[in-house]
Image 1 (cartoon, rainbow, N blue to C red):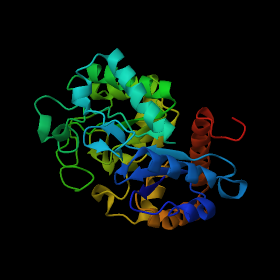
Image 2: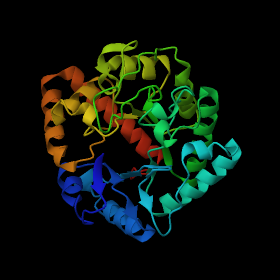
Image 3: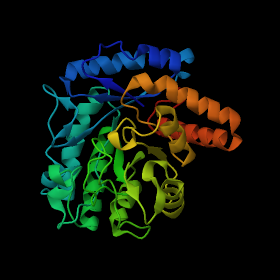
Length: 328
């Protein structure tokens, strides 16, 4: 999944889809106006062909969770309130609201919303939690309540035809630093495989989320050696085997500061090796390096090659559910 900046021209990603066979795009930078988004989405889908994508439609995503995180703006788009304010409604009311927001974005050709946030921020941490609590991106401090609102948000999006994504597994609610901007303070020293803060993610998966987005933080009680996005203990052991998730796993933006110590290609390879599927790469210029690294590693390592095949099958299964396969 490659980033499409609002300041780029409508044809900026054409070569990536036609020549590098990119299958997913995410709108970044704050896209203003329904018609701009709708026409760009239509243009992207017009690139689908036998030679470019095997006639398989594109996933076109946006972050439209609410509050400060809303990439689709201006005429034709409602700005959802932050999650803490959404949770002042009942779950049933939130489902109705999310359905309305979903109708707007699906009409503009956006078929995946990289939301909701399933992170629980403890009350005693609150705004000291830089990535989530500071901005009110969480539904609350009680994981059971958070789970109810995660499911309600997903239900509304699904009713509108939008695939939702729960994030940031296994939770960013206790960290202090923001993984987008720093590598410092990005650790949850409490989380373990029995953490009650996992409950909202389970609720989201049970409610029909299309993907689970990984955190880029570290969780030493689960894996003392690797960040979650590179951890087979977290992705395969905890998420897939213990919690039963057999669907698509996606990174947060691998160009974030928390992951900047590794070459782009190695980031992609390590994520897939850990059990992941879609690499979200906000800077499309790194696409070639990532694809080359994946291809070279697959050629040299049959185990990794099988992991790539497994990832492809999971993504295709999701696209089939979304009606993006030619036989859907």
